[in-house]
Amino acid sequence: MDMDKLVSLCKRRGFIFPSSEIYGGINGFWDYGPLGVELKRNIKDAWWKDTITTRDDVVGLDCSIIMHPKVWEASGHVGGFSDPMVDCRDCKGRFRADQLTFILFVLSTEGGAAPAKNIFFFGSGNELEVAEQHAKKIDKLTNGVKPGESLTRTSGTFLDLDPEVRAKFTCPTCNKEATLTEPRNFNLMFESHAGAIADEANKVYLRPETAQGIFANFRNVVDTGRVKTPFGIAQVGKSFRNEINPRNFTFRSREFEQMELEFFCHPEESAHWYKYWRDTRYQWYVTHGLKSSKLTLRDHDPDELAFYSKATADIEYDFPFGISELEGIAHRGDYDLSQHQKFSGKDLSYFDEDRWEKEKAGMGMTSFKQYLEKNKGAEKPGYPYQYVPHVIEPSAGADRGTLAFLCEAYQEDEVGGELRTVLKFHPRLAPIKAAVFPLVKKDGMPEKAEAIYRELKRHFNVFFDEKGAIGRRYRRQDEAGTPFGITVDGQTLQDDTVTFRDRDSCTQWRVPAAGVLQAVRDLLDGQPIPGGEKVSEGSE
Image (tube, rainbow, N blue to C red; front, side, top):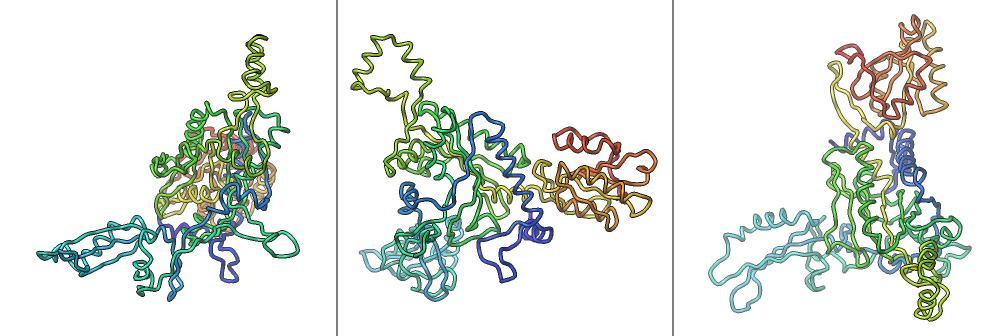
């Protein structure tokens, strides 16, 4: 699929616009138009219903975007949420030092003499093979080594080199030599101030993730929500990261929306729940239309894991710009609650009262007294009845999900000898569920069609269109991803039935006008499309 075509369609049909476009836009920020906001809302609603509403073991939360600064100290974001950056003094380009890779060929003479030739090449991590070929082609080094000379090759990132060597490097954008600055950390959190004076004491941050609000409210939810492990707390909300290089349309933005679940469980059960959520979240995307080979579930290698992580898996999608993470499922152990317990001084352990009472009743009085003696007479028991829960975290991006569903839905095919562009969304996610058309603007057809539209509008997001040829109106709805078309035509005036049209197959069939609402409900619930006449060439 051509990414440029999708971006053009999103702008033309009102899915996604550049933010502040009339002022030239602002990099890394996007606005969702009438169709885009419906698509994204449907994705969030489907996630919320499947993750929270229909389950007995998950509750919802809506936390503030700005939190106490110590939240971000405890989570490690203040001290560690930064990227090492280098700038070009000449072209003002900015690069992540840990992603600025090089290959260095050193042609040396025997006896430890100074290198006769150095060749550098920069690129991103996945370009090293190309870089090597490029470097060999420049000087034909593979054929140019003479007796008494040796050729060595090293590769790595800008950070791997000594400062005096870094100072000689060439900018990968403007090719000017010795123009790159020394690396310096660039904090990815947006800073602001809460209060009348913009000083250090009033500094706050826009949250870079929604998860920390859940951890900070763990005790509140346990005390008020009557929850028992295993249970989850979920929320959908905006997050902000001051990305150095926003790119790939909406994939990497500075303002984005997350759908996150923190699932708390007993340490002995955490491996089971990690596998459960890993498989459940992957299947969710398949169920909603990402059925192609572009969707993969990849387990992290041990050297990829964060120091506190027990296991992590990424649900990845092969976007037109490459394979990238759609959602991560992480087994975070007890790291987050332990950190907030340490920094806040508040008890964030969980007491499993049901398990304790059951075990206590089975001990007998003698054993119970022995247990208390062993635990120094403490009234509360210890592990395994009181513990800091382990956390399984499925973390999805609503914007990345929206982009993936757009990429998967985009197709070009031929109907009636005419090329059409169509978005084949899962009906649950489609921005418009059905469109209603009068075939012509006479004989009472517009009035009949509008009455059907008004009835449907009370239940679904539907569209009414009476302008242009019926084939052209079908094409407009195909581009919007509308799964079903309903046409009031000449036969309607005879037997009070209407024509239903399926977006994907272009099959048409008749439905009594009085049964239109139920028919749409059945189709959206996944009922099979009734047998009908496949649209033939010229019939639209």
